[in-house]
Image (tube, rainbow, N blue to C red):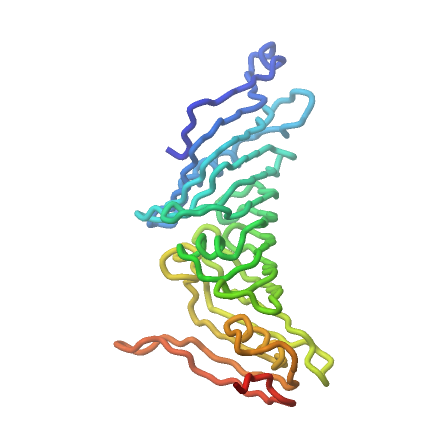
Length: 339
């Protein structure tokens, strides 16, 4: 079943009884379990429901007076659990304690609101933060053609818990993570824009003199039906190096990103390329201080680094490897310990 709930409260519109056309004002699911499943053919189990709802002529939920078309009910759920299954494999990702609402604002547009706690079923999670989603979906002939305008966020997640959620293990990073994302377009080709903010970033082994704040801007084209991001790229702006007028950038670009392989193959990226332009040596040295206490604070050398590398798949029987090179210069003394 797509959804299962022990209790469903249904409220009727009393005035509709006089017209012998029963209208449901609201439907409330208490602590339901929602299963999102995509089969081998790439079809989602909710696809038929969405297409059926798109073909039925309904009036907006908030319309005050009855008309020839029945008004769409206000649908909500509290304390829900959302599970995910791709093909024959049930994914460890789920959303718990979720509150959900769906209503029709105009004859052609639904509004949706969702808030919940992300978690994994194959590990212990204590503080994974909160996920929120809000936006609109419109009618279309096929699921891939459904126009969407969605805004999502993930906040309040410590870096250690965030890495456990994404990979299943604590990657040893500490700090706080914040993610803001927008999705605009059709379900088969929506523009995905994401801002990732990591505050007070450091390694778990020790507390450095200074932590790092990192802001990454990512974008790509998401096919929701296949859970694949095409042409994804992420960029991190660095401070302006001495003697330059423009900020440095670290850019990562891939041909595609398979989100369905996130729990088994990491990011599932193909054709990954990483490049740097005008990246200050001092900024790279700040990163090095997160991994070693032998690099003291103080001297900040000048100079920049530039270059690119490609993570290329190896030939038959050979492992994939990085290909490429970086070039840079150092101006001034390096703050190495001599003892």
